[in-house]
Length: 563
Image (tube, rainbow, N blue to C red; front, side):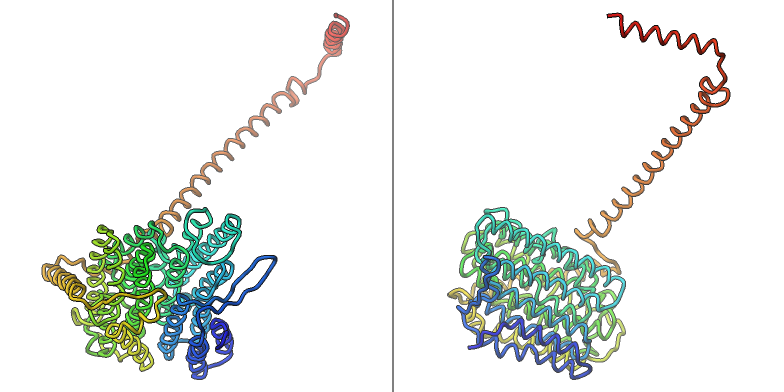
C-alpha cells in the first residue's frame, strides 16, 4: 500500500502545469487527480505519519474512514472541475485549482492543529486567484474582501490552537469541544469558513464574481473542509443544531429576490450546509453519516448546477435571471444537466440529495428536535423553490429572451454529464455511498413514509411557485445587487470611516484655529509688554530703578533675618 500524501501529487502537478502551455497544460492538469487517485485509493484506515518538532508531536498525515471519504470526494471534484476547465481555463486557474485542491487534501489528512492551520491558510491564498482571474474591478474588490476574511479565519484558528495547547497540552486534531476558550476560538474559525449566520456574506460576495471555472472549484472545497473539521472536532455540540437550523432557513428569503443566478446558488449552498451542521450538532451515527454523505452529494449536485450556470456565463456573458430565458432551444444538453442538478438538490427520490438529506431529517426527528425538524422541512421546500425551480426556469425557460448561442463546449458537457450520472447513480444505488461512510449505517431511505413526505413537500412547493407566478406576486427579477450582512463592511463601515475622518478633520481645523488664536494673543501681549512702548521695553529713570532695588532689598532682609 502506498503512503504517499495525495496533496504532494497535486502540488507537484501544479508546478509542472505552470511550465506547460496549450493542450499539454490542460491534459497534464486533468491527469493530476487521476494519478493522485491511483495512490489515494490505496490508502487504508490507520495509516499515520508523525513528526517531532521542538518537543511537539505533530501528525501531518492521518488516514481514517472520515478522511478517506473526503479524499474520494475531493479527487472526483478536482477531476470534474479540471475537465470543465479544458476549454474555459487558463494557466492561472489550473495552477490555482490544483494548489487549492491539494490544500483541501492536506487539511482532511491533518492529524494536528498546526498542519490544519497551514492547510487553512493555503486554502485562502490559493483560492483567491480563482476570483481575481476574472479580471473585473468587482472581482478584484471581492477577492480582496474574501482574502481578508479567510486570513482572519486562519489567525483565529492559530490563536485557538495555541490556547488549546496551553489548556490541554495537546495539538492533536480530534474531539475538541467548546468547554475551553481555545475550543471556542477554533469553532469560530471553522464557522467563518462554513459560512455561519452573520459570518456568511463572503461566500455570496466572492463566489459569483469568480470565473466560470473558479466558481466550480470554490463550491467544492472550502466549505466542505469546514464541514469535515466540524465533524472531526465538534460532533454533538448542541449549539450547532441551532446554528444549522438558522443556516438552512434564512438564505431562502435572499435567494428568492436575487437576480444573479450564481448568487442564488451561493445562498442555496449555505442552505445545504445548514443541514450538514445540524447533523454534526445532533452527533449520533445516523446524523453524522447524513452530514458527511450530504457534503459528498452537495459537491456533486452543486457542482453540476455551478457548471451549468458557468456554461451560460461562458456563452452569454452573464447569468442575470431578468435577462435570460429560452436558452433550452440553443443549450439543450446544459438544460438537461441543470435539471438533474436541480432535482438532486431538491431531494427528489432517485436523486442523490434524497438519500443523504433524509438521513439528517430522520436523525433530527429521532432525537425529538421537533422545532428544528419543522425548520428543515421548510428549508427543504424553500430549496426546491429557489434552486430546484428558479435556476432552470429563469435560465432556460421563462420568457424567450431571444438569446441564441452555441451549446457549451464538449469538455463542459462531459463534466456536467459525469456529475449528473453520479447524482442519479447515488440516488438509485445509495449503498455505494453508504458503504464508505465513517460510522455504521443502519438506514433505509426508500420507505413509504420518506418518499411520500418528500413528494408532498415538493408538490406543495411547486404549487406555491406556480400560484405566485400566475398571480404576479412572485418577486420580480430586478437588475440590482442585494446586500445582507455584508452591508456592514461594504457600506456602513466605509461610511462610518468617512464620517469619522470628516469629524476628525473638523476637530483638527478647530484645534488649529484655537492654537493660532492663542499664539496670536501671545504675540500681541508680547508686543504690548516688551515692545518699545511696553512696560518692560521703555526707558526707565535711574531714580525709579534705585527705589525698586531698595524695596526688593528690604523684602529680602525681612525674610532672611526677620525670624
